Image 1: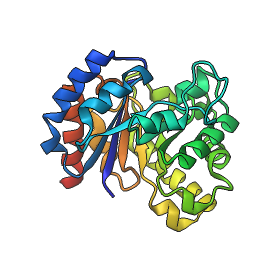
Image 2: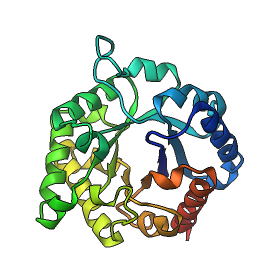
Image 3: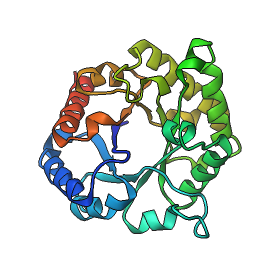
Length: 255
């Protein structure tokens, strides 16, 4: 299973900045062999990214989507709109959507179903807050999030699913999870997916780690058998640092 490393730019980059980034990253593609690399710009920059990476090995992702195909939903983006731009992946249930924008498990389930129905590859994010971790609720939180998102889905429709473990307390704080903690959480995720969808489908789901991941620590995560990639925030905003992170990840799994 190839690593999947995704750049989540959040609310950063204009169209011009996106074009500059893509040009720079395309120059390093030879160093990324065996790694699926995708960038997730803001909605306003998706077309600029598509113009520059189209036809290359780089993939395009979106940071969010609505569950309806169209309608009176001011400020929202539908699956067909993303597909038209060449988007292949979409992040679903990022912790900032859950904890800042107030998305609940029901909405995340609807978005996940819509992504699959539209032929998009969902990156489903799960993870606990610092308070939940301190009270020993990590396992229960992750199980509840996965069950709410996946229970009842036909396993044959989830072949494109990616899951990202992102401990909320590690996102944007500079405080990454310890590799052993990430390993425990990601192993739990696969076990729970197996309980919901069956062991066969669960074995095929790539599981990413996200949360203050950077060049210096990426190797300690992707060396683990439980982890097949990363969802990268701050370290993905500059082409040089993102490229260095990808190369470090590739080196770690090859050593």
